[in-house]
Image: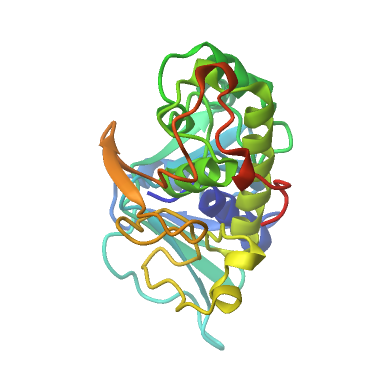
Length: 292
């Protein structure tokens, strides 16, 4: 499932290609046909993201709400020279056509037309998104600081923190030197502030580069003289999907286990079991969070 930086990139791409101009909407698959007909020819006012949710705004306080889920994907294409949009390929839930390009949506978990009230209720159910300027880290800290659930589970709960998926969860905890099994209520405020600032920086870099890179300069392949990571997720990481491989920092074997239906990755040396009184992890791993 795409993480939050991908959805923010989609919002930026829709804004760049279509905002402020009329767009033609259709639903070749048919499942969004009524709403597409209602909005066809209207101006796209703008686009925004909150966590893993994309909102495309149209006049009259109407939004197309999209959640890609596991299989959903948006594809953008420019018109061939002197031509219009290409033929529909595959099962397309929504096609948006602008002046010079088009976008096809396939396989989303959700594609629906919603009102202002419905959109407000959806935002209210989500935790703060590190990529949104209106996000308040205190809104996540309150439930974390009271919870007996592990910090690893809490970071993946979209009601607590929106947009963070399995990669950012594993990598942010490693960079904080924090045991992923530590209960939320035993995490210090200092550690939470550092994790939040790190996520803000890492996810913004993910939007810019369209990939997740989390290793610091001294741990890049060039700096360490190691081969680059070979993985369909791309990007250089510390622990995500590196089970049994040596940690880039201490060379201990990276571990994994299933936690609430998802694989959890961590280094047992760099992220030792935290003292419940000062659950800030191994402070030797922590640096200024903006150092991506």
